[in-house]
Image (cartoon, rainbow, N blue to C red; front, side, top):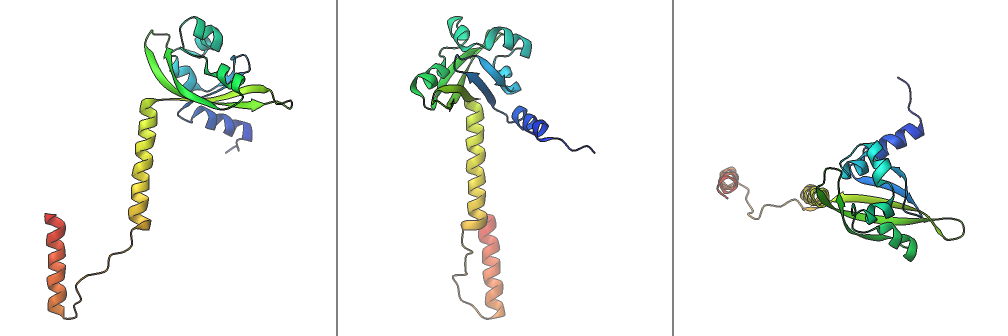
Length: 171
């Protein structure tokens, strides 16, 4: 089997993150985006590149409410918030964006790196994280319980075992 090079592996990761990832220039034009970003607009990649890849044009035509990348360039800091996208099929969807500036050697914003997720994706991720934490706590952090009844005889051990079985099934 042929080894994949680093570029192929990075592309594989980029395309399979499960959230919209995109890189915009300082004028809000798409430089690079993954397939999940294209899906947000419910269109083909060709349609995306023709009609949706310019953030300013998308805002002016009503496809998006805000051009969040403009705030990143203006404020030179990470900006996050909700934005509504009207897809090619005419339906709208709310997305949570996190956009971060990438600076050039003169301290000017050269690119804006963004990530977008639906509320459902965020809630699912949160639920999975909480469940994982609860499982971790049960498995690793809860001290092993010591018996509270001190017993030595065989009969007493049998009684305690019986009580534990009954309390586990009737609880």
